[in-house]
Image (cartoon, rainbow over all chains, first blue to last red; front, top):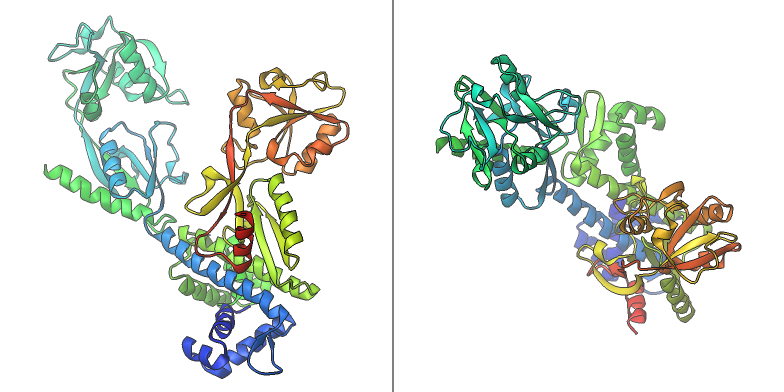
Length: 295
Length: 287
């Protein structure tokens, strides 16, 4: 069924005749007549009463008129939805595989600017071995793990801090040595597959066996445990912004950890992708980080 | 733009391939490709992305799929109507996302008063993309919280929950019952649109403090009742759809105390897009 024929049909009824309708729609009368004829043939019924004066609708024509209006309205609505789909409405998915609270600032700024776009932020450092086959649009991870994907720098890991409750005996120190932590109870995160976070490895590599009292799977529990027990942990400097806006936590630099120097990047898949909003986020992120670095 | 071209688009979207569609329809691949191009011009934007040999819908394509599917389904409906000679000129179309006994009784009065208007009841959308037709009906019956910017009037409320018990069940003679007394039972649920996946009575169980044991889930109310009658388990039903369960043989309905949900049921329509029969119905409803 030809959609233009529907518009012609509606126009003929509204304008009261084919001549006027054809001129309103800028098509020839013969073209219009032939498309109505095709429509009637397709439906197997006459839509107009051709005997007598003027153009009268048959009963079938009345029935079809309501439908024609509904269909034309549906097409208009459909075109509008398509436009909406390609502009600023929908979902962007970001997975973070490296601790960096700068991402919250980037995402918040983005959400403020584009409130109709919903961001799904997956903050759990779960098994990401094959993030490329996930449906995430963006990944936050250390540059050396991003397998050559296009990316923009978002943070730099420079050194470690010992994170503890602000009532802890070491909380007022200016600097801490690993050996000062011999008697401390530690909390570390471990991923679902049992892989310990790299902080534990760091300790071991530097000849220090931490006493692990708590293991949690995910950053939420980590903060709770530190606030409510005497346990401590190690975090990168990239955790700075969040903890500075919170009471009850203290972070003291760990001596000797400043040889750390890794970029954390926001990476994305190259090439044509299903999500047009990803480009919007990407451009925003690039501009945002440029302004950040200029500060 | 012809519906035949839209059908081709839908097939390409379903099969992810131009060649498969060309083979099935006995067309050449370039012919199918030309149709896709015309559809994309009509929609005003690319609708597919290529992943190697596969054609995947992008976000705009996903949206246009619903439109194309709705148009095609309705055009087939129109042709069917003409083929069987049914062309009642005045048709009122209502999508029942939520069942309302009260509305059906009202429609009975309405059709008695307006004998030239025929009412078509459409079921709610299901998971099948092809039957998603959000706008080709005059009215939708839905929960008030689901209405997004449409004009609406409240018509009914879902506020009492009943349990359907097979006769002989030890609770069958009760005047009323508390939901948590049923926690050891096996339940029969229907699929529903809520975030739990089941109909909203499932959440009522969660709120009462237990996770119901489920023996059967079905997508038809009839199936649910039939299985309950056959001893498959017990079921829950709200006051807005009691017409069938209250008439079941070998079942008794016991009201549940203390279920505090109350959801308003409304009839909703797109403002400015009401058909003539729609207006007549609204006037009737507002009396």
